[in-house]
Length: 340
Ligand code: MRU
Image (cartoon, rainbow, N blue to C red):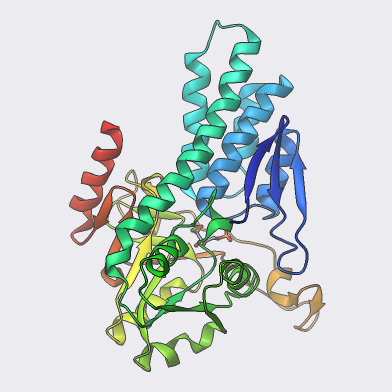
């Protein structure tokens, strides 16, 4: 499987997701500033992978001897929507505080070790999500997914694509439809590439074809990832997810969200309070550097949208599958996490 993020010889090594699928290049981040830029520029992206990257970024800052608060603040300012970023920084902060008074060498070693643990745990979590989701995937049908919630968006195996991988491994005889995911094309560039590496039968469609195929009876279910899930089950994910969810409900197709418990933000009562990242206009006016809209065109480019919980059939996590009413089921999952 593709190595999204690794710790090698004192550096965080990332596959450069801005160059895939045309080039398979790796970037080494040796400072927290380099890691912050890699997250902002989407060399590494996807909520759980951003969390691992942030943990490694904090470890790099400690190795550099940089001011700890500045390190954490710089990393926290990179992308606002994926709560895993803040979850990972908080985890590293708590550990750092607990190490106060220890020799610098010991602190550095332990911080690096923790970042590697965050990475390893993420792979195990994705496999558990896959195991928990497999029974929900109808055999012999097509699974529709949006964006890339795969190995590239995590430390490995993926959340939504983890469910798909587990269903394939279980012999369910499924294939995949990948939305291209305008404007950044994570579906076309990353999901298709990643599934091809595993020999999983994948068909690329443009985002505006989703309704057509959801109506056709061919799609057995939709599985997507999430960047932040509010206490009531509202789900922030890549822009365009909401439209797919509405079309799925209209056509009686189950709509599943696969995400680790670290993507839950139970401090937010509803999805209305989830911060939505606005990205550069050039992502919309240009495709691969080629201008496709008139110069000076006014643009909106929200990177995420919020799907109201009423469209979500179930949320698949490493601790189990949550269903409505989500206030209760997600709170239970949160409690389970705290007990661990
Ligand atoms: O802007 P991106 O590419 O970071 O957005 C990624 C998504 O929206 C994913 O679906 C989400 O982070 C879940 S990844 C397992």
